[in-house]
Length: 342
Image (tube, rainbow, N blue to C red; front, top):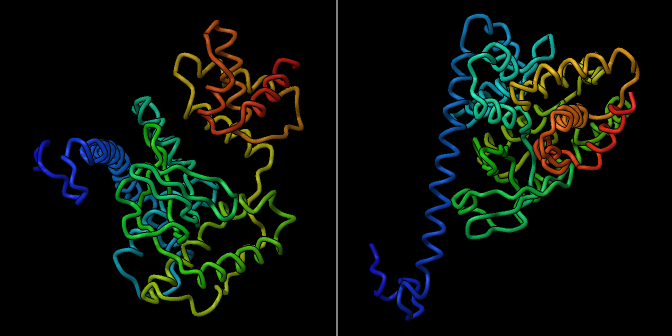
């Protein structure tokens, strides 16, 4: 423990209290916050993992292994990636993920904080990111496919990485903080070009079936997992060849019925219990008189919540609700007008 009046170990010649004390206190405070957030995440993930080990998911596990693995060879990191893919990304024949089924089976016993955490876990996707800034307590990464920038509050996540380098990773928002979960895989420039070119080529050959590259990557996340495995099995050096991966002929698209289900899910995962039934009823009435509905599920769910709370006399802004559902206030405003017009 360094005394406040001792010389700062950084070599500046100043007293510790006049030099690095406040910075180190901030780092330690942030580290403790992140450790707490990661503890909450890990505790919930363990519950989902135990849920996934029941015999009812045996066939799903076997099917998932065939879809995920590129080799019989493996290691502990690949095993962790497989578990992540199985509980968050793999979809059964009904189009449901393990996490989604866990929420449905436990919705009566989940607290509001648990529901919020699970909602964030559902929204999280594996991605390929460029490290744009590494700060003392906050760093910035940018998604190569949708160009979104994410502020990551993790003081230790980038200690062996540099600005300009690329990683495969997954971020989850826990209590307002974006944290990196699971294994971060460093991607060389050579590997990055192969991955980007390969995925873009697959996207272009299927672009009539999906709205955007973002949607394509989400629905075919196994592509990124497989590239990650190639890097790990080649001692993190290089990918010998592009993946010989054929994207399934019919990429999952959201028809109106599926969108309805997703909107109900978004409401259940985000709205307070006292407003939830009114929100569900409002949507049910709306779709009866509107057969052709366009727009994202979160945009409609946010508009419904805003509509219900506004009618209940609650003081709330469109900006507050849109941030909760990770959409723009403009999108919420458009959907709100449509609800009111009906």
